[in-house]
Length: 249
Image 1: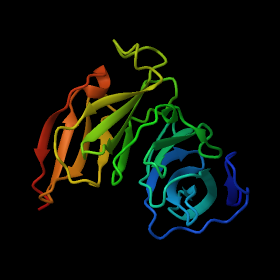
Image 2: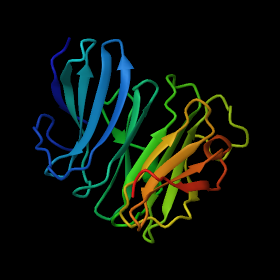
Image 3: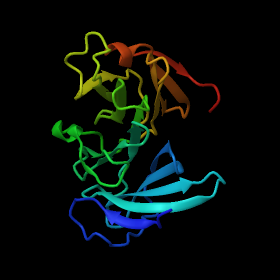
Image 4: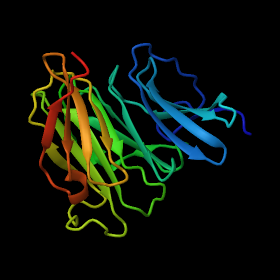
């Protein structure tokens, strides 16, 4: 088993500098299974504003071992929100963050997080509200030649939650998706009125490919759930099914 390494991506920065964690950093995580065991990957921000990924190997004995710490990106605003997804059984990974102008950035890895490059979302220049959080979800197929759907959520300057979506459909399995394949496109918006800066969390039904949902906080302090019953599967652009959860007051 190789020893843990400290590495950097091809982005500017000294390759073996040792980062210091910002105690106010937001966090994002992904996990996937390999022949070595399960990897748990944590994205975090250093005191210099860089985004790093720490990969932990969870061995069969349930012992955690730091495998590597890799520089993912520079240029993020301090205390940026973070969101991350993985697919192709960990081979491909994306992490999302904001710069000082509150523009969403994507960094993409195609080698299990060893090296990172700009993702295609950067071509869209999507601005968000200054207090916006980010949430992302993918239906995480184990193979790269199977249809993949990714949804990214954020709040705009008026506080409305909006969706961006990505469809990878190499076998053209999704009917009527010719204008959506292999590119990010704006999705629908949430008609609810969450507080500005609300936490957002999201999920996709990776078995049925027919549902996506988000949770957010209302001005009353209640947590509300909203979902797209068929939105990601058919590339629809409507929003429905909102309901307030009774389990938080």
